[in-house]
Image 1 (cartoon, rainbow, N blue to C red):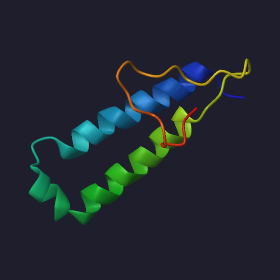
Image 2 (tube, rainbow, N blue to C red):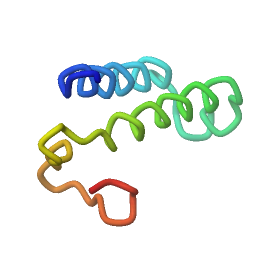
Image 3 (tube, rainbow, N blue to C red):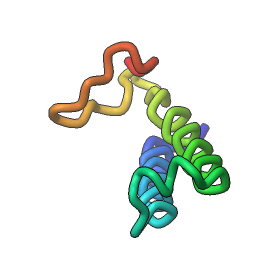
Image 4 (cartoon, rainbow, N blue to C red):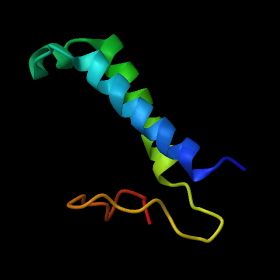
Length: 75
C-alpha cells in the first residue's frame, strides 16, 4: 500500500502541472484548446484518485480550510 505522503505528492504534482499547462492562458483560449483541456482533465482525475485515499487508520486526507468537499466524492 502506498503511503499517504505519496498520494499528497501526486496531488501536489498534478496541481503544479495544471498551473504549468494553463500559464498565460485566458479562459477563452482554454475553451478552444482541446489538448490543454484533455491534459487538465487527466490531472483532475489524478487529484480525485489521490483525494479519495484513506489512511490505514480509516481517516481520509484532511480537508483544506475553506474547501467545499460535500458532493465531490471525498469523505
